[in-house]
Length: 152
Image (cartoon, rainbow, N blue to C red; front, side, top):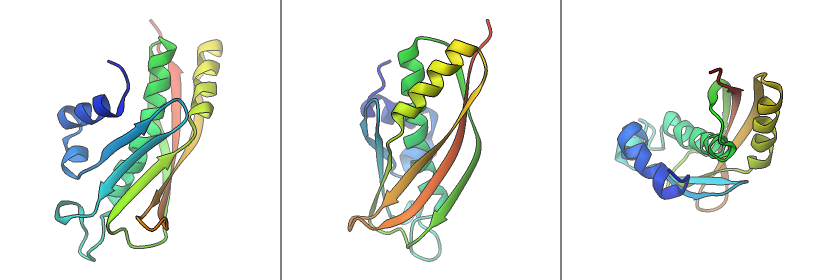
């Protein structure tokens, strides 16, 4: 399966239905960048009439995780991936369409190459920034990913 926005969105429909039903969609994926959007609506709101923080977290994690999955696929090796830690900051109510972007594909590539070379696990902190339609940052998420070549 080629890693494209369409294949990731189809995968989400079947394997991560909460991502799909909340309206999260990957819009762009290349070697350096992943962009996902989600629109505030009834199914993903909190009692304060803005987007629930966990929905923002799913969209943000998807932008980082898709970059890791793409680099693993391109390596041709069997490599495990796992989130070790995460944190987030919220600056403004998330309403309207929120766009999450992660631009760390090159750093992921370096971590994948290093784990293949050494056989040791590698970690990388990745940031996804969510902005509203006016370009104002509403939230920032950081995820610490670990990658390691699988034995056998």
